[in-house]
Length: 589
Image 1 (cartoon, rainbow, N blue to C red):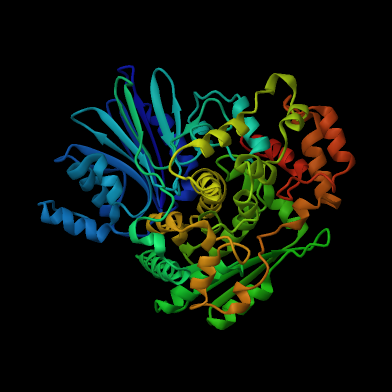
Image 2 (cartoon, rainbow, N blue to C red; image 1 turned 180 degrees about the vertical axis):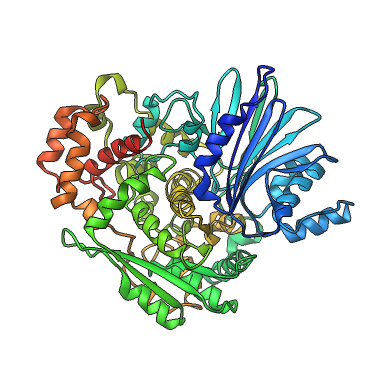
């Protein structure tokens, strides 16, 4: 895993290598092991390298093959690259390195955009075709690897993070009012291609873009999830589905062990991460390290789930590391965690993952994590509500949205007010073909939009801040496609994820499976009190933090009752607004 950057000029001028160098320097935490640059006419590439797949210098980037007329930068990991390498060798290609980057380069030469469906992995990459003067960029199916873009009439720039793009200069720093609407309503999720800044966009997951040196551009979505059983699957029983889920999980976990000698697992103590530990042990992984984090209790809510993570660690005899964080350290480290965010995120998991990744990086370079299981297998509480509702969209909105439109209108100052942009987006998404059942419409939205721009982005940003590669087996595209075909009646019972839990019973203790669903809580950021409340108040009412975004009357109302102003997802509305100001400040905006 790495950080990538580049610029393509449309104005007959040479690429601005100095800007690309500034952008690449900002990506240093993502790739602490090496760096490189390449510039030729209108194109310039920058790269920061985290050595995992192939440690040799021959796999360094930017990678250039003069015979093929191609150069590229790549961020991610292609797990099936040995099979693709063999296929390419049979076509006559010869290799000078042993990693996955050269397989991508030669695979693109052999198959063009048809390479993408052959890939099993997480990736964002850019290939420059010297002879046609075209740039091809692409992103993986579920958006595990990010790619941010800045386009003007003179050039295109791209980078693995939004703050890195800002470091290159020449980017407008005005907020996008539609994105602000999404942030305040859609639980801080800003769907691609928008970002919180009007001058920056992101390539959507499962998309590619082809753009030439004149600025002519073509863009397509190359993969989508199709819901509902196919063929003989219509008559499958719970046992049939659970067997296939377990087989799929075994393969997804196993293939992600490629080139990972020292492996860790982020162990929350829930079903998802516990299953990863069990499957890694089942696959024969020795010296398995597990890592759990906990926080101080607050508002009568427990700040850790150590009883369950300890149970799994003892059951599978892992080298377990338990990290407990106090309020003072949260406040000390929050600014650094927000500097590491590509976009503002409100989830308390961010600080948890940031601090946990700091600890994990001391012990290993690769960690497996359980993101995606809830979105793919219906683990959240709103799925039964949507499934039984006459109006699926209304039920989803009531359960997930942070505010109704009238409250949002009272929250922002008049110049930032828009129509019901977030509501319109979700309504239109529900209306798209490919998912007929109400619960499947919600699952499709969450797995292809919310998952990409909340849990997945959170894990990428926080782990890469410490040069740590996170691998997410639940996001194996084959498992995602399998989960989409499983009818809701096999997912919704037993508190959700029913079919996954039945599969897990063959691997992990029942005490972890049959427990009440937990989260990665940071109670102090939910039940604002003491020093934390004072800090949040300063972020919102200090004149230096006033950007003309929020209505002072709404701030006064929320601050008058800081414990009673929670969203339907039980998050603090005050924290959400303060988090935006904190991110803007840390990015110098």
